Amino acid sequence: MAHDHHHHDHGHGNHSHDHSHGHSHGHAGHSHAPTSFGAAFAIGASLNAAFVVAELVFGYAANSLALVSDAVHNLSDVIALLLAWGGAWLAGRRPTETHTYGYRRASILAALVNAGLLLIAVGGIAVEAINRLRAPAEVASWTVVWVAALGIMINGGTALMFMRGRHGDLNVRGAYLHMAADAGVSLGVVVAALLIMATGWQWLDPAISLVIAAVVLVSGWELARDSVNLALDAVPRGIELRAVRDYLASLDGVTEVHDLHVWAMSTSETALTAHLVRPDGHDDAFLHHVCEELSHRFRIHHSTLQVEISSETCRLAPAEMV
Image 1 (cartoon, rainbow, N blue to C red):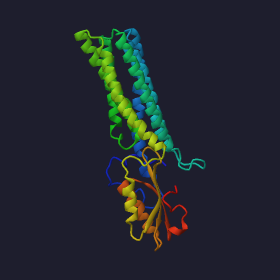
Image 2 (cartoon, rainbow, N blue to C red):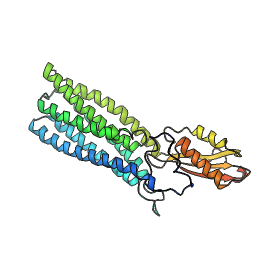
Image 3 (cartoon, rainbow, N blue to C red):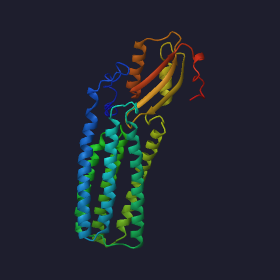
Image 4 (cartoon, rainbow, N blue to C red):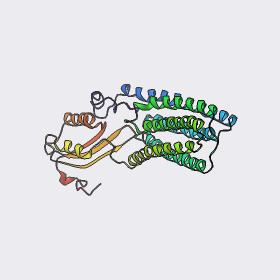
């Protein structure tokens, strides 16, 4: 089921089509978001691949270790973009007999691998910078400045394409962070090269690299933490479990809520299961209303509710049962 990845951007006004019939989802309205980011992934990956080639050519021509090592770093970015793109594409695949959720979890795995790549890249930048501090290399040349300036434009432009989706989808945030980090690295290279030409201080190049590495480390760490949590079926960031439980407990006729679980099906979709004790029984209208409200209030679009007349009969009722 290719789901609407925009749920997270438009507030709460547009979810009425999502759960009007429990689980009978319409597919028409769900396909435009992945394709729009598909274009961003395609353009970003192509531009970055071309840029890697340019950096290698000019780096060898100018004998600049800075450009060659940046090319290797950018190559990891092309891989990161392709991973995120593949994860997003797999997440949109239809369920099968063996994978009843489809391949939604692939988007979480892609975010996890991307976080790892980001942290490895930080290590690479830091090691390179420390080596440079020990033995400064000649890096100041106009070739370096122009190639790095091109890098700012390509990476900055690609980051902007992913900017609006970065809060809603961890995968898009991973792509955004990689591109933004790269634009930062390129900016650092330009600033360092210009300052070195003005002052002759070769140590500025590695010093700026270390500052950038620290910034990338913080954002990469957050991405790693969030994607590990999603992989462990944690409650997605932005959803307060207590608020969900209070809402369900406050429903008309509901005397108890147990076996409540909220987890991420993919980097942009959330599921919920719960048992509601309602002595008066229930009708479909009650269930549809609750699913609709969970979608509106909490952006939980896949709710499965079990209504029981009494909690006596449910062996999952005790709080310590999972």
